[in-house]
Amino acid sequence: MNASVKPVYRITDLAADERPRERLGKLGPQALSSAELLAILLRVGVTGENAVQVGQRLLQKFGGLTGLHRATFDEMRAQHGIGEAKAAQIKAAIELGRRLMLEAPEERPAINSPAEAAALVQYEMSGLEQEHLRVILLDTRNRVLDIVEIYRGSVNSSQVHIGEVFKPAIRRNATAIIVIHNHPSGDPTPSPDDVAVTRAILQAGKLLDIDVLDHMVIGQGRWVSLKERGLGFSG
Image (cartoon, helix red, strand yellow):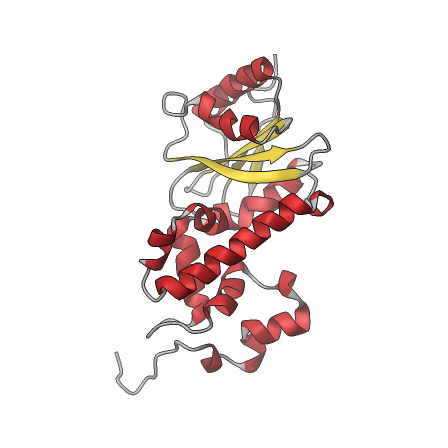
């Protein structure tokens, strides 16, 4: 590495129109990526990484915002460049978001199509290096109660415990769920195991009186609804 090249690690090293705080002020928080929002909380980065890059690293390490929410305080503060103060800020911000969703049900997005379900998770899940199985919990009006990670690893009928899929729904009194997992290969074509898992989940849902609205596979820039294709839902 050329010693004369100054490593970029501060937000102020970015052009003014690329700085997250300035972008938020001009465009609103909804225009920023998750990494940029984290960068505003972090304020500064570390040598060789600006705050946005640190935010991207955290999202990749923990598997997105859901993973950050699930991570313990100790796991968070152990990450390079974080420490106790920044870990506390991130955990506090995520918890405030969770409480807002619970207090303001009218603000929860409603899922009325597979495309709307995919839009909630596709950006994050398409970049995951392992398979992750998540469940979108829905109320009686198909509004999102939560998105919960159930499993990380190969999604096949021998390894996925169907009871675990429904535990969060039972705890939260969800009336319906949408099951989603990703294919790290980028190809969202459902496998025979995906179809077998779908059939097992549907059968369990009928017994528990919880509607399984869909099972979706997320790929790179594409997604597949098994319900739309009649895979596991027919018959």
